[in-house]
Length: 87
Image (cartoon, rainbow, N blue to C red):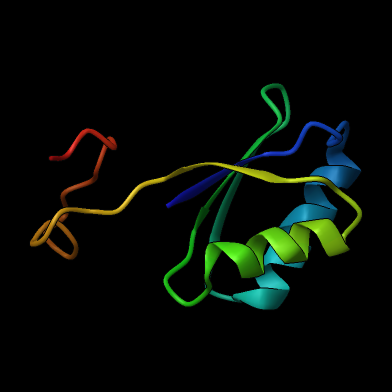
């Protein structure tokens, strides 16, 4: 899971453009946008963070990667979600 901060995102149109740009890179990506906090969370298994960031930038925004969360071994597929605190 990746989280981007997109400070120049300001309205629902921005949300739509960013979501569309990400899905053009990875049609299977799960995209969650929080307009109030200007955060975009992306769950993508097929795209590198740089590709997703470039897609957001090409849509006209200035993303910065905030976090990258990976599931610990064995968690994936077992219905276990990760809060990012795995060690």
